Length: 354
Image (cartoon, rainbow, N blue to C red; front, side):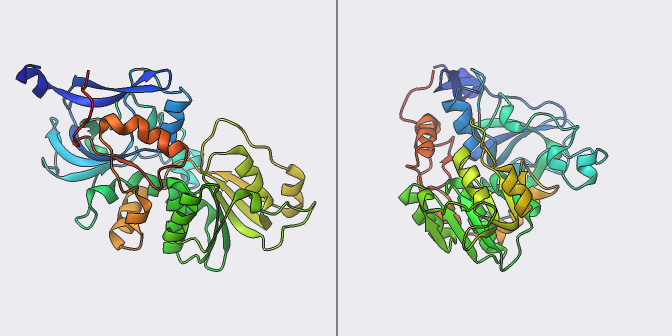
């Protein structure tokens, strides 16, 4: 490939349709006014990426990846206060501040916000990504690149904790010990919650849940069948459903004590069925948790910098190159990867790009 062509192009892991991906060469994006070009240092593989690829929801030709951190490589016209080389993440667009959702402290569902970033066709499973300078947030020196890639999913978790408002002494159930569930457990521990049970079918992930702070782990079949109109023995005050499985959501609701709260974080293609009579009699609350608190990215970075989280146990030990993204997605879906898998776009690839 001619040298000039190499310099003008970057590698990207592209969804090609039919549940497949390939590494392709694409033109390096150039920032417009008030934009910056970021050299991606790490990008986490999200559960949403699994659904988009394995369930064929993604748009063919798109580049996924929204859990990234990186360094500024180029400034567009009008960008001030930032310099090439600065380490950054990009927070969400702010809520409008005027709609009912914003007025009640729920900017994650602001009526004026556009589609979530994971629907963008130009994500960060690539060497470079463009972002509006107004969204940039500096990464503290205490947070390395691998930890900084947890900023976005940790902000998601902190929003769920805001909605549930767990208190020391609460009994908490977490269903699913994938990367999202592990983050929930670790964040709960950092908030002083000690009674955390994790329901997870994969032995590797149950072990990992114990490492990040679960006080007890069990297989889903060990959850007791709820009696009619009464809580189970040793019921939970709050349940966080992180697996995206319909049966897990149904089971989690059945484990709640009177006035219990179910927070649904995990996305899935099959809708759960809830016993509305049980919800009435026990006055249960079920709530969806979508994205972030206002300021959630800064809160996440502060928590990452605090040293209160077991970063090494939250991340899969092996980062992957762009040509390993698809295999890592499959491995994350079937439980073979024990933590959040990070993509390193600068890592040497085994296959030739096209």
